[in-house]
Length: 498
Ligand SMILES: Cc1ncc(COP(=O)(O)O)c(C=O)c1O
Image (cartoon, rainbow, N blue to C red; front, side):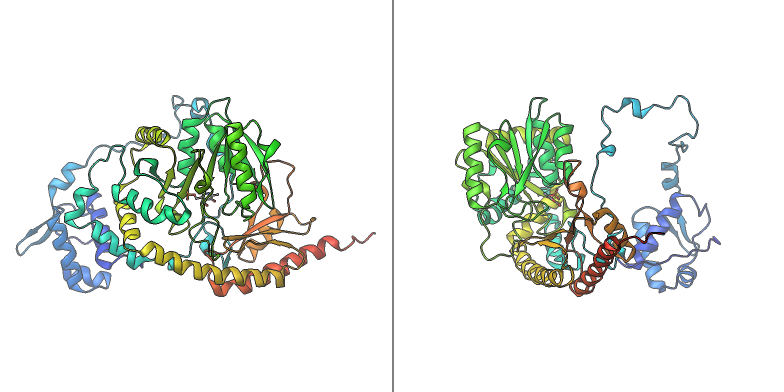
């Protein structure tokens, strides 16, 4: 009998049976039991503080999977075939000193890790007041409905519909749902061959940039904007131009002349939240037609837009096929799903599809099928309706408290958006404020990196509210207000002489 003492710190989120099984598989593959019997189920149950039945079920399942062999009256033993299968000599992947190791820095044609990017604190959940942008409160995810769709998509009868290699195709059901349920709400009518499923808008832009850029290509990008938009096009070889945004949206006319492509966020400009006016939309389309440029519309947050009747997509006004439309489920459902879609001319979609095949063939069809069912069952729409109510309440609470506690700041607030763009008093540097706020467990984002130009204003911050719990909004904003006041006072107190 083996004398190995086992202890497991059980965690939430997985059953005890799963955690014991995981531990045993790990120990078996490390050959920790040798040819001795595993501890009896009674002893193991005592050691782990679980019922004997739990251990028996784990042992039996490991027998079923060929890890263990049950020997009558002697107990459970590791199946020797398991270990025979996996004994190559381990090689240290990164030799500590090896002059002959490849010099990666000399081989890289480009080093994307050096591109400036937003400081997204991955430990945002550890903040008491996470005014982070782009994350969701996981309690809001419609897990029961999603699980129901996942279960049904993964039923034996449905397996053949998604386990195969789709090569360059998408799940036709998801295309149908996007065509019939999602796009019409944005005023867009598209045929199946005008839609491509992607791994989110970022991926859509990457593919477009790869396909359409040359060193002569000029892409107009709103300023401020997500810095990765510049990186994506620059990486693909194109030049980018930072185009100013005013209270109507991206500036047109001279600001766009010479551009081959123009990337815009008409529903809510990222990050100032300004909605592009109808007049500006028409002017943009007219100029695109006259000067033969293409518009890439990033409709990243439209579905959950909780204004009574938001403007339809820019694409819905496009009579010449000049607008490529990109959207995703990242904001309406979850950024972790990495599911997006592109709508454009069928000739373009055909080439993008072929390009996608070269890269990753197609986004996982299991996720595509679950998303399709989720939309088909009406869960996407009902989730959106629920989120609209939640976001509307949060937005109003944010606005009230920002007006109350951040009196010295200018609050840029567009109802229906996911964040507030705040202009601090001129002399307060946002980076310094963000650091001090973090010390008080308040997570806010500096606007500095969202501007393309070096000498851009340094006194903007962005406050998201999709991830923070409603009851934290008021105290969080109040504390932030005190901090801003203390910054303002420190900076305005004249220094004593002598
Ligand atoms: C401007 C903008 N576009 C698009 C997206 C969505 O990107 P994805 O669909 O890749 O998650 C985001 C997400 O934060 C965004 O900020």
